[in-house]
Amino acid sequence: MGVTVDVHQVYKYPFEQVVASFLRKYPNPMDKNVISVKIVEEKRDVSTGIIYRKRIAVCQNVVPEILRKVSILKVPSIQLEEESWLNPQERNMAIRSHCLTWTQYASMKEESVFRESMENPNWTEFIQRGRISITGAGFLNCILETFASTFLRQGAQKGIRIMEMLLKEQCGAPLAE
Figure 1 (cartoon, rainbow, N blue to C red):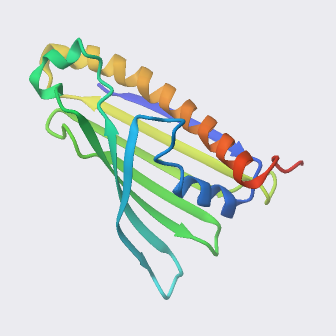
Figure 2 (spheres, helix red, strand yellow):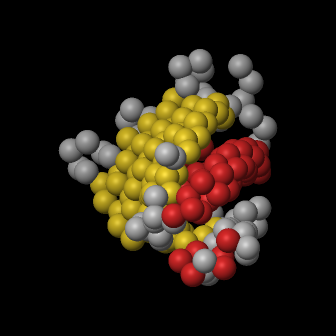
């Protein structure tokens, strides 16, 4: 089975400002679930100018206590790996992330893109597709997928609100059409 969540958002800020805010978004007091984010690899391809980054995020375990009675779910934190490819010349950044915790029981993957908006070159479009599939938890698969679906949708909306607040804080009011 599995749960998919699609997000599409236009930020009325230039690409460079949106990407800079995204890269410094966490940790942040507006989302206490993200404990830390650490860059583990960063390199620039001299021929293309593309900047590759690999980051590891440590997040609080948000699985409800009632479900943590199952021993596999009783962990204090969850690790996520994020890889990004920033192309400053083409003004886009592709991002892939996946969960490093519970890989034998679940698969969580997100693919995202920040790119210059076709509507207005001073705006930035954000497109994301996230997918969670629970496979190794037996009768709990359906319950955990329902929880994951709700959490993924709420998390996507929370991430957009945080980005909007950070952009307004760091860059001022959004650009007009």
